[in-house]
Length: 102
Image (cartoon, rainbow, N blue to C red; front, side, top):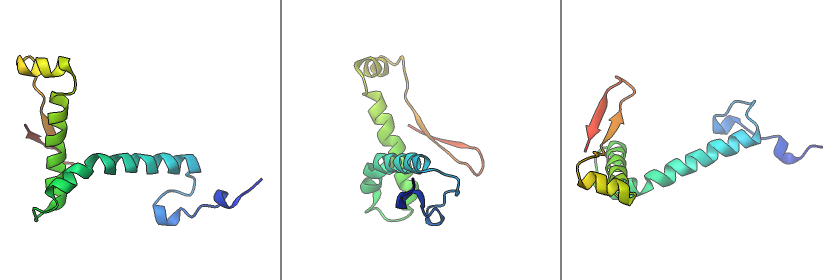
């Protein structure tokens, strides 16, 4: 039994022809989660001008470090007592370096 949804056009989505509908759904969902996750950082830097992508990536790291520091009472207490340090970094694919961001 075949339906119109069995014949998907993969060319526009950059997916290999062998990708089934479930794989396409998972890829789409992952993309949505990524976009939703970084959206606050993009919004925060969008009016600053310059390289918005680099600024948004940096802001996203800063935001997530702040979230982790206060994520649970155990983590926040450990950070306050200097038993735990939460740091963030940006991994550069081109040269394999990590830019540390506090």
